[in-house]
Amino acid sequence: MSTATDNPIRNGVDTATLFATLDAVKGNNEIAKFQFRASNKWISGTHSKSTIHGFYGAMQEMQHVGVHVFDADHPAVLVGADNGPTPVEYVLHALAACLTAGIGNIAAARGVNLTSVESTVEGDIDLLGIFGLGNGEVRNGYQGIKVSFKLEGDDPEKLRTVVEQSTARSAVYDIVTNGVPVTIDVEAG
Amino acid sequence: MSTATDNPIRNGVDTATLFATLDAVKGNNEIAKFQFRASNKWISGTHSKSTIHGFYGAMQEMQHVGVHVFDADHPAVLVGADNGPTPVEYVLHALAACLTAGIGNIAAARGVNLTSVESTVEGDIDLLGIFGLGNGEVRNGYQGIKVSFKLEGDDPEKLRTVVEQSTARSAVYDIVTNGVPVTIDVEAG
Image (tube, rainbow over the protein chains, first blue to last red):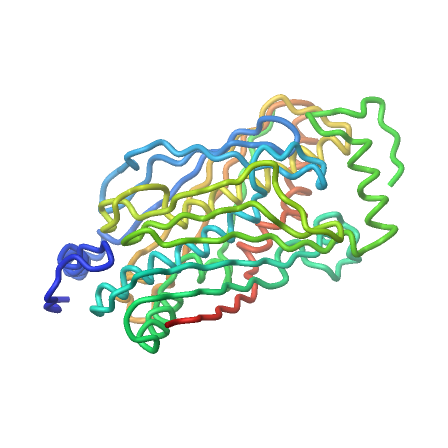
């Protein structure tokens, strides 16, 4: 895309680099094939730690600048030691963060200025499912998720269309609403 | 469930409390209705921070012991400042952590001892989707996710059936494989 912008940095997004990246991907679709990864180690009970560092993309092995380690656990009320958020809470964070990153990028690409983007995400879950007490009628996961955005910046109508476009292009929104095939291999011994 | 166990603490799981919790939920299904939450604030570009603290469950407002704050961003190759993992990587962490918590609990409930549980999760994604360059044929989210577990402990066959049962009862596995209805509200101005 060779859209001209009067301000190459908008909302903290380097739009010149953004458009150059899109041009590069158009020229060679292989650049767009990524593999993201996490490794996890069980500590005790419901407590585990994941590490996120390396990934594949742009036709090469790459690494984040930092090595990121995250604890997950159940709270005491769910018979854990509360060493971190629950796994299902991380899903809510991922959804908010993905939609928000898209809002930043899309607003910049459209020349829309943002001054504030805040959101809350609520996921309702009936734990009869995971407890195996739902008689097969209660799912294990969230029954529904509600995201509430509050944006400030340019024209409110433009801000709304930016959120719509971010939703239409969000990886995590697609994963969470449409599902993904998952395979599980086990080596035991 | 009033299953007797010879060792009430196994794999770091207090099985007596686990079974008492299941009994309590059987007696009053309202206890199982939870709402988890995250709030997110955009920082700049594709960088945002989520906070996870309060939740509703067991018929009351509750809080994690700690206030958990997580950065998410895009790496430089995706025109971000790499202030944290990408949102899609947090999804992989959530999936591994949920399956692993279930393995810890289910093994304990079945009297199966674990000595080590490690996993790697790989998610393949073609970014032509989120870039809007896929001609409507490339999805935004992962095309597939592969989880590879390596377990050590009691009889390998028992360990395998524990992973199967954890998968059958995992909230994040259900969310990621089957999808969840998501509503998005926007307040702009």
